Amino acid sequence: MTDPICPCRAMDAQPLSYLACCAPYLEQGQPAPSAEALMRSRYTAFATGAIDYLFGTLAPEARHDFDRKAITHWSSQSQWLGLEILETERGGPGDESGYVEFVAHFASEGERYAHRERSLFRYDAEDGRWYFAEEANRRNEPIVKGKQPGRNDPCPCGSGKKYKKCCGAAA
Image 1: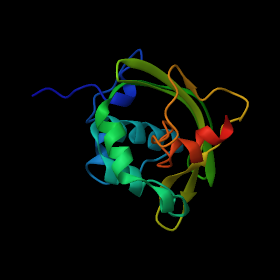
Image 2: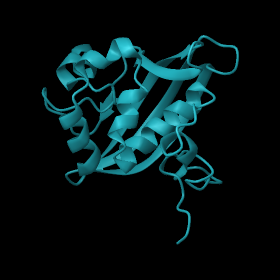
Image 3: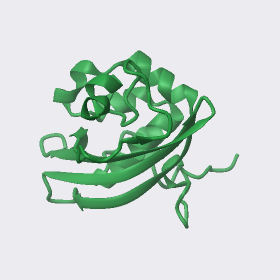
Image 4: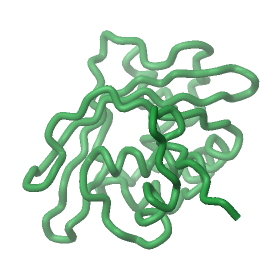
């Protein structure tokens, strides 16, 4: 069996294999070394249905409204096409926080989507892990191009919240 290209690297000019990229975080429990690595692994978790990983990499204060059933449905019903990292700001060794701006490409019900977001990640020095803290979008930019999700659909940003309580609140 061959090692497939990692879902987070499918759009890269020189893609990495899953085993060389996100598998150590998703399958072996290694902590992501940076905010960008955590972002990539969370995208891969959506693509592979690793819902426990998505929950575990949310900052504890953001876990209260994680909708496991909705996220599982969205993850399994979408075709994950690739991730573009547009910019990173901090988020490396020695940083307490960092931002990653990205575009997540996916298709659902025959429609293609390009979800652009700027996310805040924070580092917990006690456990040596990065966590997704919150979406940090500039509210005047469109969040989803194409067909808008319904009010009660899971938010395409991956926060675990319903669209109406997350990106939909910005509209």
